[in-house]
Length: 91
Image 1 (cartoon, rainbow, N blue to C red):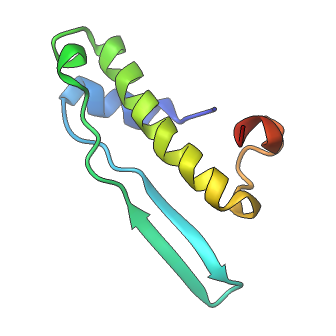
Image 2 (cartoon, helix red, strand yellow; image 1 turned 180 degrees about the vertical axis):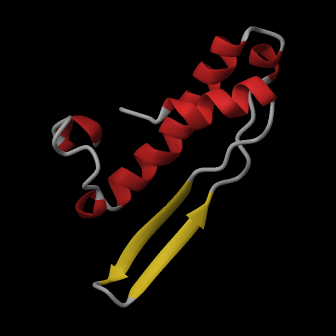
């Protein structure tokens, strides 16, 4: 799953939490739900490792959150449909 690497890199290098923010349209053009994930921080093993290990750990956590949302709202995901077939993302 494609993820923006800049936020992951900044969070990993500075050792600060990362939040995944998503907005889902409940009713077209009138009702939306915005969600902010719990703070993502590298697990203990990744904290003592290098920056690349911290980035990878954060990326896996972000992936898990995003996959859940993609499965719950597949009709809302338009970001990657030109890069990856939606069926491949939601499996």
